[in-house]
Length: 129
Image (tube, one colour):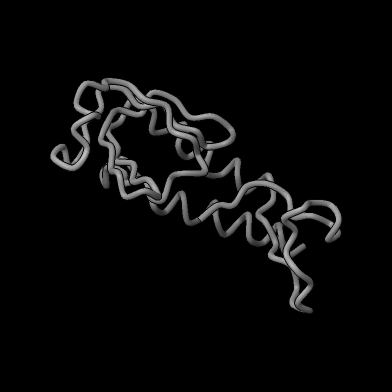
């Protein structure tokens, strides 16, 4: 999963800064990795996807757009469990903040897994250098 934001550089940098534990800080992905996912999702615009949110809501719809923060706009949406979320029945389009997305299910025939694996390997090698 991709994480966004910056870790505080010192405990005083943020009132919610984690306590020093002696463990190395979590390394966040470089901007290049974010662009990998961004360009990947941009190639799926117009395709049907299922977006599962961290609150367990799953939304099916057509990918309308995605931005550099991996915020997603869907059109012609429906929820997978309308009995649990009846208030979503009247919603036709939605904007989903990237930080609340747990999974994005993609059409298998639209994903070039070999190309994606090659791009991921290339970025991993660049990070090691």
